[in-house]
Image (cartoon, rainbow, N blue to C red):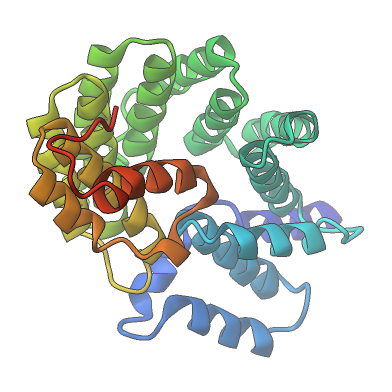
Amino acid sequence: MLWSVMMTVAQAAEHLNDHEAFCQSAARQDCLALLQQQLDSAKPFSVRWYQLKSYQLDYLFDKHLDQQLAQQTTQLLQLEDMPPVFRTQLYFYQAKILHSNGQLLQAQHYADLAAADLAQLFQAFADPLRLVELANLQTVMGQQTQAWQLLMQAEARFAKSKDPVFLFELYTNKALVQQANGQMADAAYARKLALDTILPSGDDGKISVAYGNLGRTYQLLGQYGLAQQYYQQALARMNPGADDVRRQMRLLRLSQVHCQLQDLAGARQIFSQVEPQLVETTYQSLYQYLHQQLVASKAIAQCDAD
């Protein structure tokens, strides 16, 4: 009986992307507000509460609301008892938060905890996304060989899968490893497969990510015209309000591409749309550099944004 209850609670928070279906059902209502409203009315630490809390964490992560995510994750990790999948989700996000803050040893600790949990949970649930998530964590921690092996295992084991989300995540993470290893042409091919796979779904969030990822890879390849095209398509798929933080990243990269094409007027026009208060810490140096090139130095004839 206890095992049955644990399985039910664990499965309630099983998929890291389930919040998207929830948000689609919210229609025009702000998804984060709706999640909080339903959390307030749910019995604390019930199956429904953990499900909603899982959706909330996923939303914060997907929308790059890092400060709110860090606050929530730190508080929730103090709970003594929680469903295994939910605990693993906390480890996963804590590792990424710490890594992005440069706290590498602490990040590795939580990455190891998440990896151990995910390995066990994969055996229990046989969910292909578990392997991809584990591979993603390995990639973030710089363990590219292990990440690639996991992705190959996932691809082989679920070769007949037609799930667009799984395939999108698989190709996206293959591209991450290839890009980290300097295999840029292979990464571009994988990112194009990710885009082609997710386009028919109509999922604007993932489609925007796919366009933006492909744009970044072409930018790194020096194919700035293609990069510009894909960044513009990524921005067109974003939703005002929900995607405001991610929007700043794409605007900065698009402005940078215009610089690389020596289109100063275009670069300045795009840069003028950036909201500085929403720029993530990771992109502050790029923001400051472009500000110096495009705003502080108005007399320059060309900009160096490489």
